[in-house]
Length: 156
Image 1 (spheres, rainbow, N blue to C red):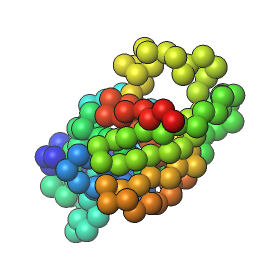
Image 2 (tube, rainbow, N blue to C red; image 1 turned 90 degrees about the vertical axis):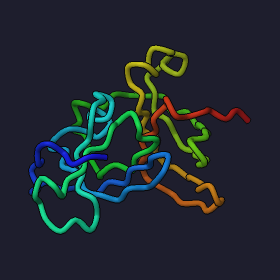
Image 3 (cartoon, rainbow, N blue to C red; image 1 turned 60 degrees about the horizontal axis):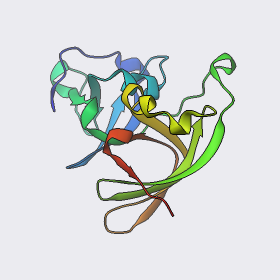
Image 4 (tube, rainbow, N blue to C red; image 1 turned 180 degrees about the vertical axis):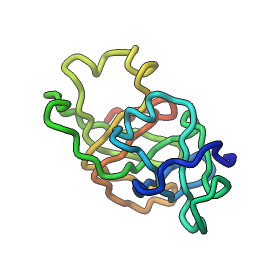
């Protein structure tokens, strides 16, 4: 992580939790009107203000490589009705690093077999998530974005 080159608009800060291989970073982000899934699927870097940062100067912001993210608890976002698409619900279980994750993937019909989806849209939103830390402690999340490039699906 390096200092971010520009400072996002500090007026629209939203809480975010980023899971990387070596740490969990609790921070704030300024997504504007974009869905966090869309931001992450574009790749590149994500500018975040770590919890405990003292101000809104450029040196307070950090830039995280999106490809390095394993999972993200995104800010709450309600999509406009015109962006909502009917999707099939699929229960999934996966391992990501030392974590175990179970949740509901909402996929377009037929997309569960689409290998191209992995390369073009690596972040998959899950809802109704239970996740177990490496020490076995469970926690629940309403929404979790998982980087499929770091995930291994578990078949029962």
